[in-house]
Amino acid sequence: MKVALVDPVNSTIFYNYCLIDELARQGCSVEFFTANFIYEEVFPPANITFCDTFFRYSNKIKMLAKYHKVRQMFRALEYPFNLITLIRSLVKGKANIIHFLWLINPTVEYLIIRLLRQKGFPIVYTAHNALPHESSARHVNQYKRIYNVVDHIICLTQSVKDELVNKFHVRKEKISVIAHGDFDFIINQVKSNQVFHADIFEKKSSNFTVTYFGQIRPYKGLEYFIKAIPYVIKKHPACEFLIAGKDSGGNKEYYLKMICEMNLDSYVSCDFRYIPLSDLITYLRQTDIVVLPYIASSQSGNIPMLSKMGIPVIATRVGGLPEMIEEGRNGFLVPPKDEKAIADAICKLLSNPPLLEKMKEDSVNYAKEAFSWNNIVKKTIEVYEKVAGVS
Image (cartoon, rainbow, N blue to C red):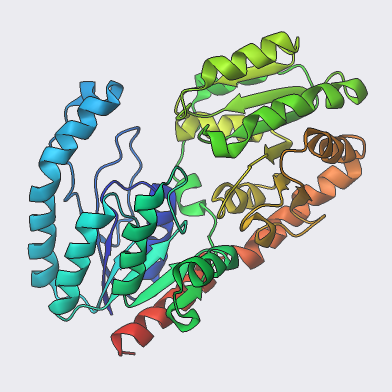
């Protein structure tokens, strides 16, 4: 089967590369239409056709990486020409299925999808979220049109499927729930930054490190992690805490002020940059527990990655997160906006090192079962065959 996949900005690059690698391994001929990742070099699978169709020129102007609005303007100018190239390539390529993994302008992409369907191409769309995290009323109408026009929708959790059915009135039969996989394909190509690695481990003074990592945006509830720290250090004063991730919400100063006012400076280390993979691996190798204190979430790619690396996760009971955590096996679930519950879950593990070590081992075994790309892609190919009418 010939499959064309599209993500204009490669916004879920780790997920994308793991998916297309396994599709190729299971016999699909894969073309991936996307953009080069601007933050660091991450190599795509060698067994697929990689087409840097989008933003080839604006991404080459390195200085634009520092100026988000200017980069957006250049991309807006380039995007229509990229779409023309995409349509020509897709029509020429004659794929059995076209799979959109991400959208950046649903009004425009609705027209593209409609045109491709008129030309006889079956269209699958992966809805990572029912709506963008920072959405408005206009997004509801835009995405409703998308959900109506595509042939089939893949969701990563039942929670998102329920939202599509209840809020957008999508037929249940039109939606498949296929889990998020681990990031082994990505992790296996990473070489640790040895200088950074040596520096971090030289500074480490505690047996235990509890970490928040990932993009920092309002819906991720970082403040509740910070508020939980005083409760933890009352019982475990030697514990260290790490906050690592790009401040995409512009709230870095707010969090730093909170840490300072709570007299937590000596307990908390902050790294508010985009964390390169080589540095991220170093951080995670010194981490015992990761906390995801989200206020809202459809799912999290962090959970499969962390579980496969043997790191227990404390996550909030919101959206699709409960579907990714087996209580007491790869993590614990707590109510959202409840710093005391977060602290209690952390202390439960820190106070019982044998339990922590067992959960590290159990997390790996759970990930092998729940987040296996082999199983995920078998289900994905079944969707393709059903939608395209081929086998």
